[in-house]
Image 1: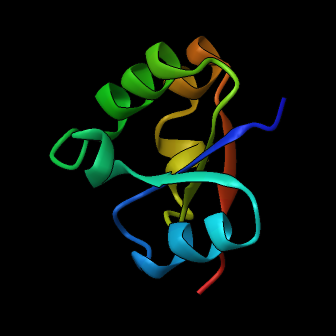
Image 2: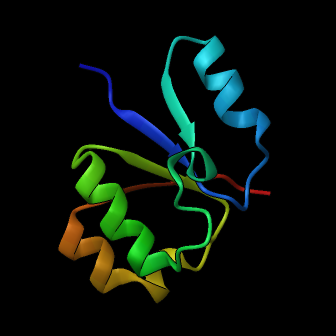
Image 3: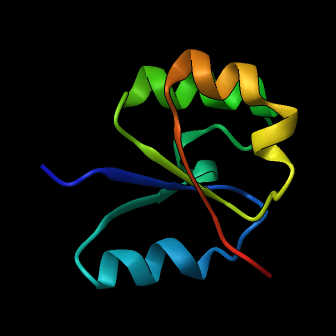
Length: 82
């Protein structure tokens, strides 16, 4: 089963659209109702939604600033370089 790709709000809304066009299961955090959540709460909600989801973000600092939450939830993170 393909992994759900969750696109963070700091990236273009075109990204999940393009990923879906390419046959991927992708959604923007706003579509999930997670837009206003801070990163630790966002990671918890993504984990609750789908433990195998991948968070795609442009936040280069997330691995360092949220290492504990990433480890606790086992979140796979994909960082898109600017």
